[in-house]
Length: 490
Image 1 (cartoon, rainbow, N blue to C red):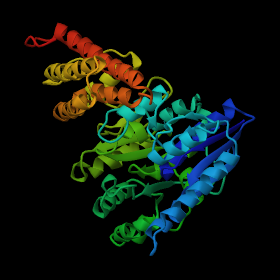
Image 2: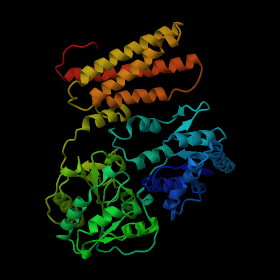
Image 3: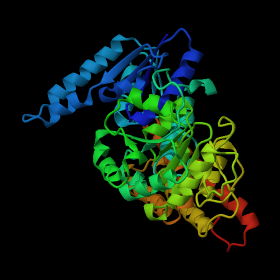
Image 4: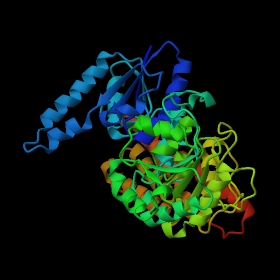
């Protein structure tokens, strides 16, 4: 058996794929396991013993053809065809797409049509998106920026790949820096500037750490963070911090993390490396990041969330770091989130340390009810029932259009009305965000409709609208029982 795993996103996602690849090898011990990565990230798979072969996509080579003095789409297509031919020649039995992108789904569809079993996003012959499994449909609807899913990406990757994870899947190759030293490692950069801190904040944090920490403090990161590191170092005594910014490759970074007692980092590469080395992490998580999906998975890790940099109290971060390193000491710590003792039990990997409520609790519990047979959340936000009534009315308009189409009326006559109805549903979500999980689930149902005859597509569209109406009525009825609302259209 020969399996290809497509992972064409960034470094952090590649390291989050390591446990899934190990689980795949455990499930299929005799299989050849290949991984397709962007060429610039090829080194992120080094040392992973279960991978038989690394296939690479040289995006710079392809883009070079498109931005040259004499751009050539033909040259870019030729290079793409060379990749496709190379992959087809491998005769894969199974292709697992963990990238969720247009290109990766197109490639997955291409290989599927040549005999491979495709998991994850794929494409039909007409290039429309093909979502054949429940977890990919969940990803389409509920995962991403400004969404409320609390399922970690590693769990989603594993579900797409149809494997069960085990603690043994998180381990790093043995290399260098074998002994754990008195070192705190900082990653000062992040994938996006708004996810990390300014030089002033890092300087203050390092000073705070130095008030109780006598060991090494080491900064690691890429060359692009050189200016930030220079600003930090120039404002501190030489012995306060050692900068290795731009001086280490990925394997050396992993070795440094392995030998550290703690990693402090924003949403960045090192928190995923630390999961493999089982180094505790203090994740400084900006509000724009959903740490539930991408946070640290090493035992003892904590997440300190902040709305914006001004709100992040460095003294609180320092005390939390101290508590991670000295769990037996009585240290007053701020509200934060901690990794659950058993990350495989339940959907979430994190819990509030002080059991405080969050603004997104309602939406998350609604997702659990819609997808995982969880209990409906209590105390819906203001205007939620009214929004349900509006969704019901808009959906009724769409269903009336479908009745007319089934009766033989021209589809074109109702196309704009159906499109406008979808726009109104999106507008309702904008006004009452708590309805987002329900409406996005409906849109995901529509995306899953296969190409076919007019009758087949009509029947599937009717079914999606009927399901939405059924779910709206069920929610409205349940909440009406326990809330004193005015009578509505339902």
